[in-house]
Image (cartoon, rainbow, N blue to C red; front, side):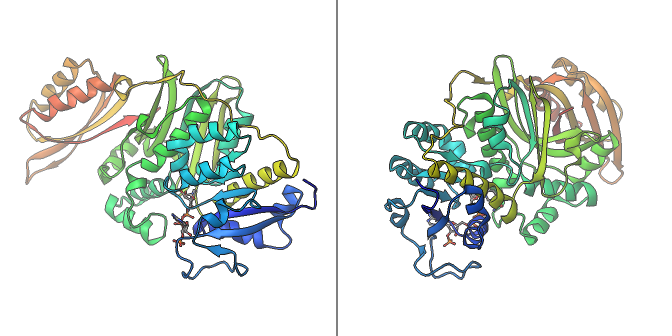
Length: 432
Ligand SMILES: NC(=O)c1ccc[n+]([C@@H]2O[C@H](COP(=O)([O-])OP(=O)(O)OC[C@H]3O[C@@H](n4cnc5c(N)ncnc54)[C@H](OP(=O)(O)O)[C@@H]3O)[C@@H](O)[C@H]2O)c1
């Protein structure tokens, strides 16, 4: 292709991200075209409802509700997908790839569920499939794992990868707000959706972790491989006790190796207050990669929003446009193996925070200590607080020494059955 030839883009989606991508492509002079080294034109934009008012003014004839206008147009070189969801996006990708179109996407769900197959299909058809915006918004972690960090044996990836939950947890920690109030506030500010399930239950983080682990370990992982626990069970007193012990509570998404497999987990964890991850607040994201050559590498930045996500999409688009311009072979997509197994959460070995609501009478702690001891769990420290005269109950917080997850789960069942124990308030894993 000559430098003067126009590269045509079909954009699917004109919402938060699509609006940013369209605006940038329509701007003159176009920075994307300058970076690509050739004209890049927005040829068609797919939406569900063409009659909805938009915050971007498109040239006449560009907006469509018919996917065929993009998929069936041989003049379109690059499909940029920012609709979300795996259906129909995955099918559109397959059709685009099979007809020789390159694909750029921000879609974590489709990449987590079908990324391995789509990457193989793209490789077989010698087209590019780039998805930097699918994880971490403006943080360039996907490309780094594919390219700059690819020579490393990665021992762990520890992340705060969902800005909505991090905002809620930051409010709960700093303002001692209850979960429901912090969530309502996040919804009011547009950080959380009307149905917040994907964010607060860790589903979104599990998709992103699946994508990162697949790239870091060169293996196919699925969202079902991720052990997942949401943040809705946290109560204001957990934040108070965590602080007394010198910890913050953060929802972490972690992949690490050991015992011949990879363990993938998303859960709220106690993180030492001086740890960098404990100080990532509000809607910010962070990714910490431990590699055998590079050591510990840290990324921090805006994980969502129009600007950061558009930045990632356009970076991929400029790279893809250069490829089309030069008629070059796509790089980056390595072959995936099934080599590494997934280690069960039962095998997790860590320290635990356990909060119990018990009858305020003598001998209770001895019974609890015996139940823990019977499961090979030793106590590191105990805090007894908040005796309630009216209900004659007290709150006991126990920090354990390192123990096995399966033992802790067994002990909690036993402890929950002890007559003086009114309720297991919470169990939170500690990530040192
Ligand atoms: N928002 C962020 O900060 C962010 C950050 C990182 C990644 N992402 C990812 O980027 C993607 C888009 O997110 P968004 O926040 O921009 O979503 P959004 O605001 O809800 O916009 C979605 C757009 O896609 C269109 N669309 C959805 N399903 C469609 C279908 N089946 N056929 C045709 N058009 C369809 C919608 O059309 P109508 O306008 O007609 O309804 C809308 O224009 C998602 O994969 C998301 O996970 C978003």
